[in-house]
Image 1 (cartoon, rainbow, N blue to C red):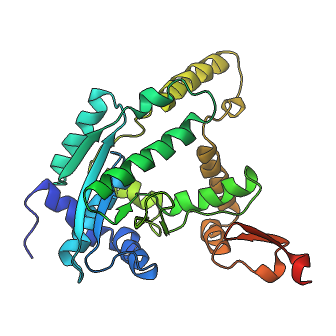
Image 2 (tube, rainbow, N blue to C red):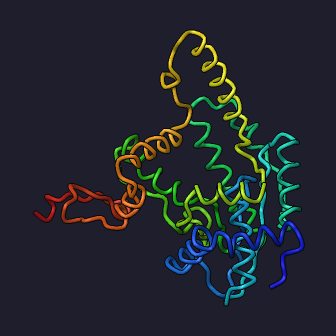
Image 3 (cartoon, helix red, strand yellow):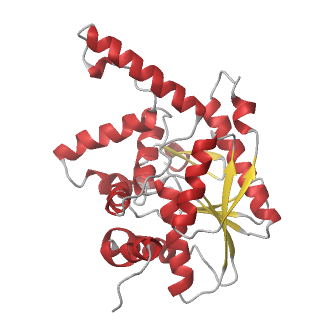
Length: 293
């Protein structure tokens, strides 16, 4: 077999060969398990510039190239107000990986900059809406996001510990605001550690986070940590800026006790026993076990 000649070919080969068990098979398994792609679909892959969405873009290219079904692909990058250096990095990585991105601009960062309550929630909602709208303009019936296995189990824990409910990130769902549109999460079975290993093995550098708020918080945390260290305060006393990061660290602690903990968290929302639930919500209607006791 001929060795790949270009960096892009090396990256593609690494997904199919080197990370077949950790990335490619889980990716294909999720597509098949949840029937994500159908013949004739037109799918917009939404790219933020991070490792997850860039990997997803390559996986979608490869499944179109080697799979049995024919469907359309668009690679959308929404610029909500990135710093020029961040946008340039996205463009350079897309060129390196031969991903034909389509960039469209928005002013979301400027809109949410003065929002005091839940700016991250508002930003996420607006970004999702912009992506749906633009994808629909391009004739797409589905959008694909780069959420992975770890995002799923972190969401389960966050919903329980901070939301007082059991929710998870669904592998696919219909849009409630854009009729005929559907959201897909093809990396649903792919673990973040595998994505990080793939990135590092290929010497790739992606955006960590291009959010203005996160950048500001990170600087503030670094300053507080430096100040705390000089005062003899342990790093653990520094307040977390990200609930999701808290969940990552919590799961890591759980893993020391039970190495299968993450798989068990995932299975817990696929094996819900309604006979042993005090209450649940279905189609917006609340049910209680006493209703049928």
